[in-house]
Image (cartoon, rainbow, N blue to C red; front, side, top):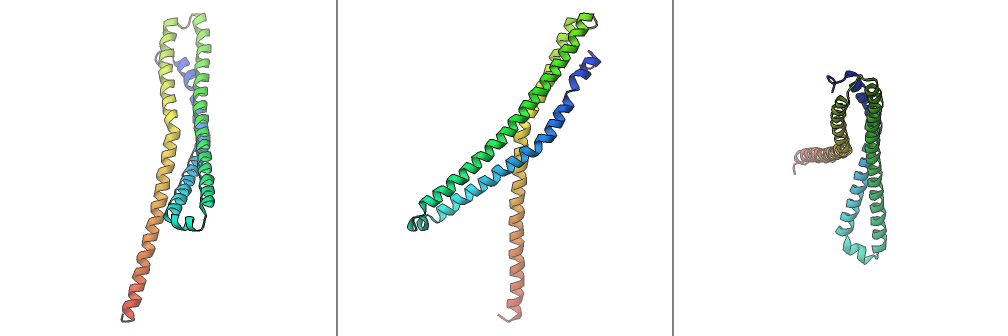
Length: 189
């Protein structure tokens, strides 16, 4: 692209910093809503586990309605968080298409003036637009997997949080056992 027409190449890529700005601004919202969704899913899973683990007690005390309401509230919270995540994901996708569309429009406007003035042939313009289309298609494909990638990053972070909590719990248990084993052996038991 650059060797075909450096000036048109500059016009084509000048819109990409806008995309970087959009990515930077939207990443936080994408990650926050992804984390909210995972927290709501965790709460929902916990409610299911607690209810199924104590199903006889729930039935004996007639708390089915209460548990159903807890489940419904947790489910709706999860669905709401997932919808917010999807909205931010689509906002990013729209921003990507909008920026690449603006770049294409700027190139076509600038290139049409150059074709009319005779500085650029129609064939060169066609080849340039083909190259530019490939570049923008690649950019769009990358951006369409960016939000799911951020969701995966949040998921890995959440997994490490859970593992850290489990590791801390194991360390505390080992320390407790170590301290109590010293006390028991010191008292002669």
